Length: 280
Image (cartoon, rainbow, N blue to C red; front, side, top):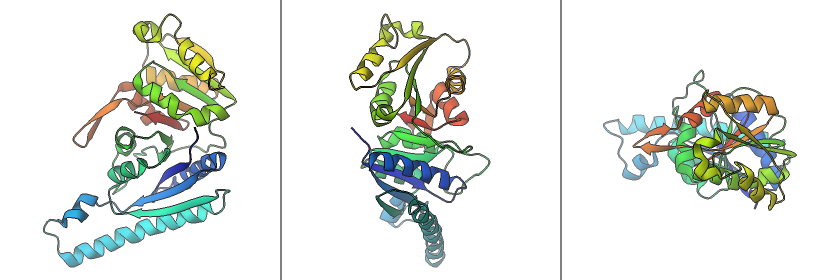
């Protein structure tokens, strides 16, 4: 298994270059095709129905043209950055849709999606604050999230797997195999495994370690008992281990547009310090 098609979200944010460079590094490692997708910000459902309320058609045309031009500028930036890398194959796509729905639909035909963490200090008129979790829940593909602060020279050299024997964590580990096979160090950490003994078995972490060993991946397993929030305990482990990538399940469900998250997922999405590969 390898990543052969990688999708990266392109917008006007200040962190776009860091996000593209990380996506490009992964594409080069896996000889993958890289797609830069920029969304205009208007739902495709409005385009399909032709319904724009009571807005004057001429005014709406001007607004749509402005949104398209803004997206084109971001895509041109994507192209210029990628041309400085060693990516062999790439394309840019302008999509008439809002970011969450548009990227989630494009994700269905890719192996990996690269997006940015929400930065509340840099609000966007088109990208909603719950954009990352929306894509995780609805995209159906692993999502690699890049923090809104910091520069990352390496990604996937020292990987930390947050393992709780859940379906979501299982999906995350399976989807991360291309990273894990190239990693120098892989750590598996299970927090308070005694509370889920029926899933972990007699030796928490041993089963997933054996599974990965059959893929040629050697791991170190750690069990940790903590009385604090597991999300913050996980972030502490990232610092202690010197990890440059976290692999974990994304927990939550959607109720209409609102995305309701589990506590650990919410903490990591808010306070991540290194890139996180998350699967639902």
